[in-house]
Image (cartoon, rainbow, N blue to C red; front, side, top):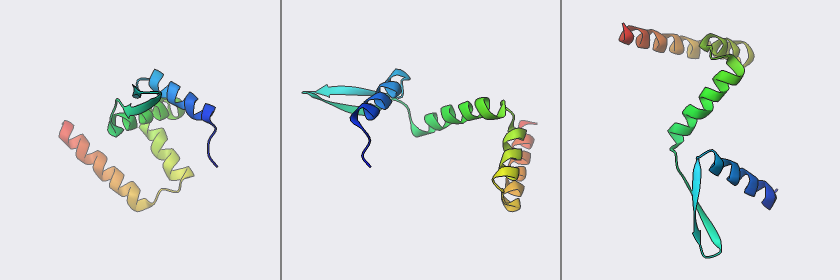
Length: 91
């Protein structure tokens, strides 16, 4: 189903207010465009999820993925290997 005009308008205003998008008026219409990249938005969204749901604990995040989302053991091994590589780079 097509969303209501007011719903779309509200979402657009919220995104503009947060600085994610802007618009250009052309006649009696608006052209909307992003102000941040997809990568920047992913960082923003991930930080909010980590803070709101996992108390900024990566251990809680991985525990959730393993227990609740049945993370495959191969995926978990890959994640551990990646963590080890990153740890060694920092040393």
